[in-house]
Each structure stands twice: as structure tokens, then as C-alpha cells.
Length: 167
View 1 (cartoon, rainbow, N blue to C red):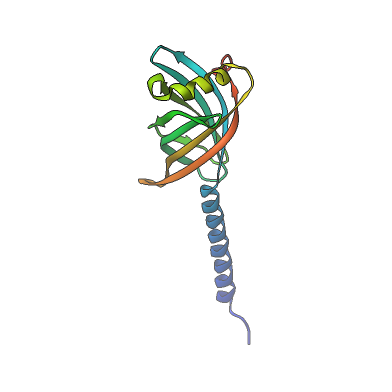
View 2: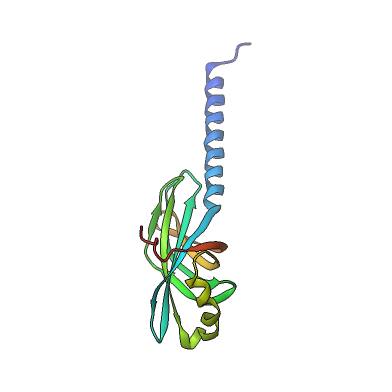
């Protein structure tokens, strides 16, 4: 009894379908795995009422699919002390296997964070690294029009980039 050619075609299609399924599953896992890095901080403005601090963060896309992220909402801690919150409502595209640098503005009011800022301000003005923690969430577009919330909690040593922030 001979095996018909349709059998081999069916096996080839099944193997191809299995490979596509495995690739899609791997990419989905990579979409859920993010790599973050806090690159630096910089004091932007000091007034009698508030202090503006910029934080530069890098997001790495480990998957083979371009991503769109938006609606960042996070609390900012410097040296273990909460100094305020940051929000960013724009949408950003992160290329496949690529990175995107985002700059967040944090405005801390002295009347609200007086003791925290008194402890943290000397640390932010000195050259070197400062431990910064960002805790919050952002939205990621999975398929066009469908967004999911992605929580994050990262701590990293950030450089004081007073002179080099925009170079």
C-alpha cells in the first residue's frame, strides 16, 4: 500500500501551522516581558513653591512586534522617599527589538513634600548616582484599538544629568 501525496502535504501544513503557533506564543511571552532602565535625573526648576525634576527612562522592546504605549501614570521615589507623581498621556511607538527614551516631568510642591524634599534635594544636586524608583502603570496596544494595562515597579541608580540631559 502506497502513501498518497496528500498525506505529505497534510503533514507539511501541520508542521508549518505548529511553527507559526510556536512563534506567536514566543512573541506573546516577549510582549509581557519588559526591560526598563532609568537613565538619569535633572533638576529643571526651583521656585519658592515647587521644584521640577526631569527623569529619563528607557523602555526596551524584546519582541519582534512594534508596540504602542501610552498613558503613563507613576509615583516617583528618590532614595526611598516619595517626591511626587508623573504622568504622560502621549502615545509612543517602540520598534521591534528596539528602545525608546522617555522624559517625565515631576513637580513636587514644598507645602506637600517639604520634609521629603529636604532629605532628597542634596542628593539630587550632587554628581553621581541616585537610587530612583518608579511605580505605576502604562497602557499597551495589543491589537489596533485594544489597550491593556501594564503595571511596573522598577528601581535603578540614575545619574545626575544636569549638564548632559539634552546632549
